[in-house]
Image 1 (cartoon, one colour):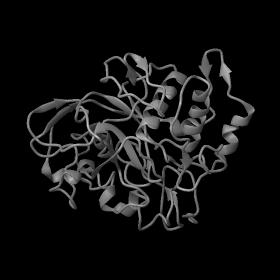
Image 2 (cartoon, helix red, strand yellow):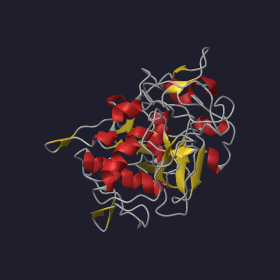
Image 3 (tube, one colour):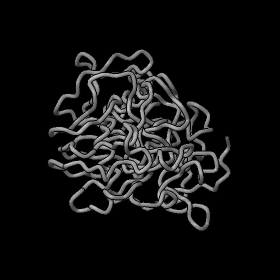
Image 4 (cartoon, one colour):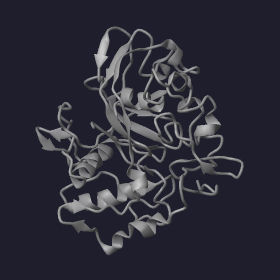
Length: 331
């Protein structure tokens, strides 16, 4: 489907395909890689540590709150403590995906899927005016392997390992080792981290944000591209409808964009029921399972799927043009 809605960027209308100019070659200055993707799309927001947050059934999905898909990560009876972390302000753009993947291909990394810009970009092709749309059509495995490549390219320690060695093959992957402390590499956020960030990060300082049904608002059309307003396609990150047809998307309390709508986002966790009882430190979901969590709703989904507490899962090898991701790391 072709989206005919006028497109824009949240701060300026940029011809990002020209900015990338990957055909001219990747530039290395000594050992420091110089990114072509504008710094704006690589910004990370700090989420301060959240000590012993008592869950509340008031935060459940108003649509599906009595089901596992609507429980959210913080139901009543569950107490969660989260360490501080940083999370991307924007969904991973196709421009950044393509730039890192191009570098990774010559550094021992293998991907199962080439990715595309939005719902209708050509898979694996250099960005051509669509670099600010989110990457889609990538699996959970592609996302975690890309995180490792992004880490290495950025001078960080790759987060995902198999038998102690960095995970580099998404086409024939092995289950990653349990997360180890001390790794500062890029990774997918856990489901609890994702939802805490969607709600604004600080539950004490931003109680109104935590009470919002969507990320930063009680009204879906203020903050999300979804089935009723997307005109059948993915939008550039950080934009939302306004009286002119499109304008800057208001960030949520944590300074994040598109936490509701545009594309679903892979999280680290295996999908499973979330129940109250006891205190959990940095929960990362069940130890195993056939599905990985996706959060946030999409341009092709309902308003209910964009709710902060709405949950879902998909096989980690699956891909579609509704799903992308954003990154996180330990500060």
